[in-house]
Amino acid sequence: MQAQKKAELTGHSNPIFSLELSQKPGILFTGGNDKGLVEWSLKDNTFIKVMFPVPTSIYAIHCPEGYPLLFAGLRSGEVLVYNFIEQKITHRLRKHIKPVFDIKSSSKKGELLVASEDSSVSVWNLSTLELLHTIQVSHDTIRCIAIDPLQEKVAFGCRDNKVMVYDLNDYSPVKALIGHTMAVFSLQYSPNGQYLISGSRDAQLKIWDVKSYSLIKNIPAHMFAVNHILFHPTRPYFATASMDKSIKIWGADDFKLYKILSREKGYAGHLLSVNKLAWSEDLLLSTSDDKTVIIWDLSI
Picture 1 (cartoon, rainbow, N blue to C red):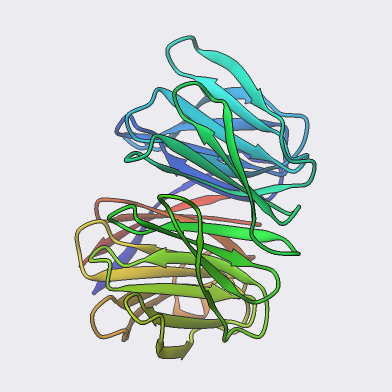
Picture 2 (tube, rainbow, N blue to C red):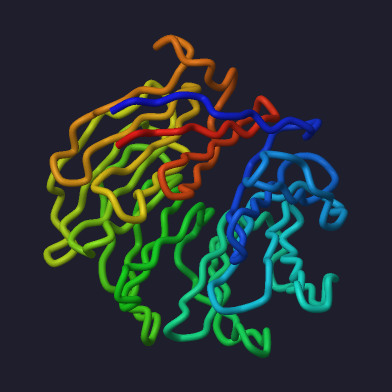
């Protein structure tokens, strides 16, 4: 596997916590600890504009497939809804009063899920933006959400070290996955739906069998917290981003480590914690506390 740094996007004045590809090809959105959500062009790797100002840090961005909407989850607990057709913020979802850490959606159900530090997950109708349910998942922060490929199960990563699995149809609890020794920061279901990967502040990756919810494998993956896990959309690999400033590429079938993108390995990588990843075909996009987005070209 070969890797090279293709481009670096600069302009943010503070750490970047989130990035998300638009529904429109070639467009990237980023947000963090400065005063706006930023739009970039991946065609020529340039800044386009600040989409809209924000009163507090952006911790989560989500662009649901099939809807002309962008959701931005704020440190304040508010979720801003930007409508691409109207070219403005049309709604403000005000359910949570503590930071929103993750936002995901189910196209099958037409629902939006918002995870918060207040220990709950709110569920919204994507068409009407009405609040449908509130799920009291834990007694502590909910850091991340993962929905399985068939959109039948949803998993929540919690600060109390647990992964809580729910039925997506009726939001009834299915299983608590216990094994991490620190907060769970990232979750991803494999594209084939056979397993769930959890990444934690304890620097471990845990591979869980989806049928039995048993632990298949534990990988001491990084030196510090695993901030994000993301499968390649078509190839048998997944990437992990860590507070240890590195990105690692793993085999999705054999769980072997294939590549480390870091300054220690000779790459012009991030200087601080790597917070979020996105795949655009064989380009891997990463963002960091160092205020930059790096675009990696991987021949895999």
